[in-house]
Image (cartoon, rainbow, N blue to C red; front, side, top):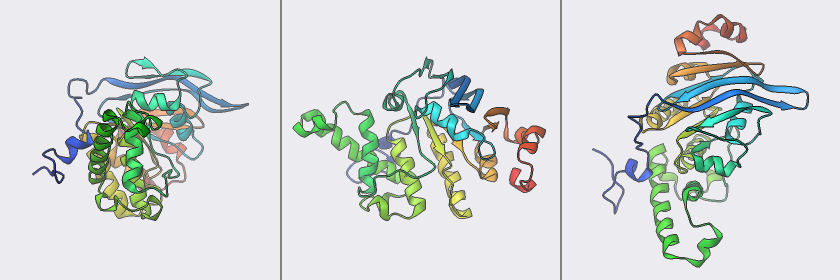
Length: 284
């Protein structure tokens, strides 16, 4: 039976807004990079990288340390401006728009180093994410208009629902800084989902996790995809990547060296060479 929240007739999933009408569009290209290049002075951190992400899939972006994975993430999400090349998202170029505009377009992300508001509760942190979709600005909320009160109620309901969705509903009133590390990771994912993204970008979400936590994370990522989100994942744990992704893009020294299904990537000579020194069982 689908779980409902107290005082509502809607399911947690309905309130969280996680059901997406993607059936007709599944398989279509959602994001595409074209010759994406990022330079820092004379250093080429990302060199003419082209790949696409299709609606409804989990795409892994992997490579050795220094391969350009996070640089690529940052170029897609507006942290860095590409030196050349382009990013197309949902049929339109992202161009040189600001980070908050990229969020409104439908791209959300987490970070390698957790970035939460430590003195705020878990619930409040997720509500910050819902604000990205509200028409009433935070300063404008001071007048307490009818629209603001409705949006505030909606934000609380969605935040509670998303805490349920990621499995930390019992942590809602605790300060973010006091949460266990694994729950902080889940909270960051909930806050990203609160922006109602079309594409969720996860930057090493399993960093610091033990095997049991990684297994639980795999279940959560699959649950996120099954509820209609498209996921772009950077992760060093090859076993996790091979187990959860639909397709994998491999970078080395800022260049794309492979793009294919997990079993194809596992057997690709260029990938094996790039990971030379990594035990075989970590590649499969």
